[in-house]
Length: 410
Picture 1: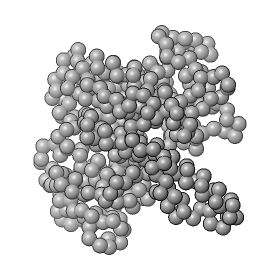
Picture 2 (picture 1 turned 180 degrees about the horizontal axis):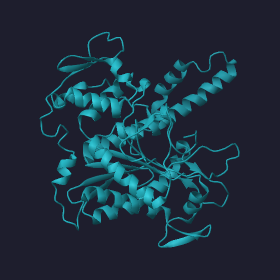
Picture 3 (picture 1 turned 180 degrees about the vertical axis):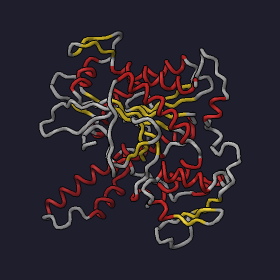
Picture 4 (picture 1 turned 45 degrees about the vertical axis):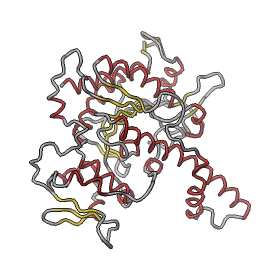
């Protein structure tokens, strides 16, 4: 993806960790002796760190793997994971079902989602925070402003009753335009100031320019720590500690970078993310190493991938969009057999326990999509550029409902 003011978050922003203290590796203790070395290595190589960078921090023995903070293995290991024989039944956190568990539900055909608990996470905050989030644009004075949070919340509200009608318990991380976190930008002044000063980005500037530049950078950094770190961390805490779903669905609408004249584009694509593909600079961070181990050991990947492939297929059929193409070094790799599904290390799917699928259909600044957004939600179809189109929001919600119901019905 190109750089954009309002669409896909850049990797640097998404990998910001909201730290509240030293990482506690003992959270991995329940998974001791639950995975073989072969299973562990396969997941690392194919899903969680295909670059091989994590191996620099690992030391294998015949029966265990030790993980270190540094690539030269200085100091005591952060943790030692003992391998098992792979014969334990379901080496996953019991709160989350494996594919075998799902098959054993024997749901009746009229309630395929019975006993399934789904969290919908409408992306971004919106409202008074939309411009700060850079998730707001308006091309013409009388156009309907495009706020991604408005789009995602509308989809979530349309999707929720469909899943409930199929028997699911459906919970939203938010249902308004207020942050989930209780923090606000001013709470991060000290951390932001330290970060900006340590960056050295203004060294050598004239005194007044340096003073003004630092002040502006601190403000921006405070805002990033608020809406990109604290907000995502607060939602993850809500999901992990209170909502505890079988599946979390992150609802977003994508975008592509503007040209120099801020003109709408013809390109429009679809991508669905599962968790994985940690980059070398990310596995250098101990907090991210811990989350990688946690996500690998909890066993959520098979369910996550299968659900993502099912929803990606129904979204592709409904939207007729081609897949986003990510090249080498992009921070994303194809995962599974569906060309629309990629593994990527996003904060939203890293911090949340259990299976998470992250949806990014449509480009908000595509010509046709923009016209459909301007029409809002409606029943039936309306003619655009000589062709009938349903409400974009219903098309999105209907496709996701169909994909999830189909997945759990199999």
